[in-house]
Image (cartoon, rainbow, N blue to C red; front, side, top):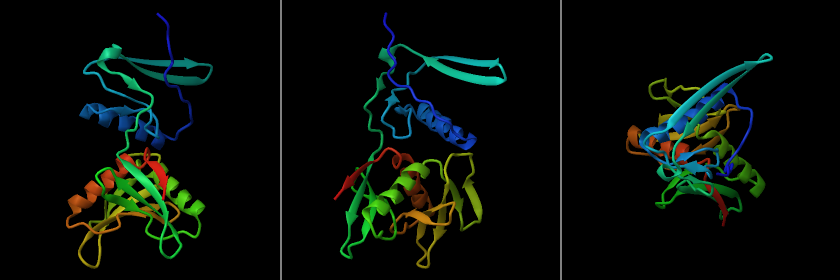
Length: 215
């Protein structure tokens, strides 16, 4: 029987980045959902109910390699190399003031994130949304109303989600880059902290693999 490599990738990741990758796989496996294998979420597999797990640790010439493998019959969990796991789309557009903006719209029609402010060029707006695509999934979550970190797991993100209550007693979130800039926010306030958390979790899940449409 012939062997076919349907997906292969190699890249250097920080410890935080590795944690983000394995955590995403673990969560999808636990829920029985399609498991994306790349950040763009275009390659995914349907998790089988059971699989052979093989772990190899090899030490050679001062280098250590860790190989983690899963094996199962293909009919029990197919691999999709043209998957679209994200349920949202970035929309890049020019507003009435001739500023360029982006928004992240869920398939249900709701806008779940936007850039907050307009950009002077389409290129800068695209750079802004690309930063969100890169950093949203692994962003730590800090509850500023209680001055505590809600999610402090190691990740590869350079940004942090901040949950807070505004002057009108509405709950909001914003995504702040390590350089201090706010690169995304929820747009409108939520009636409860729980709903604000649900909103940012949707952004965490959908931003990385979302397609970009220009209006």
